[in-house]
Length: 88
Image (cartoon, rainbow, N blue to C red):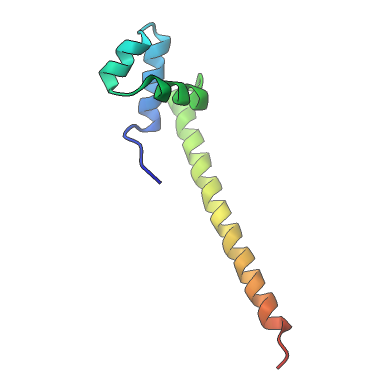
């Protein structure tokens, strides 16, 4: 997965600038991003502050870790079922 140039905190701060009254065009030029990027960030982060963005990231990381654990356990269960189904 491609890593973003901006952290969640930076994205939220850029959105704060937009809410603060700066024009979208100024922000795009200043940070070298497109208007569509700002729209995507706005959809994802909405009215969050920096702490909420950090919590969101932590929850996403934990969710990904849990999915990996579940996939590993499912694979182990399938292997054990296959081994037990064979006649010796």
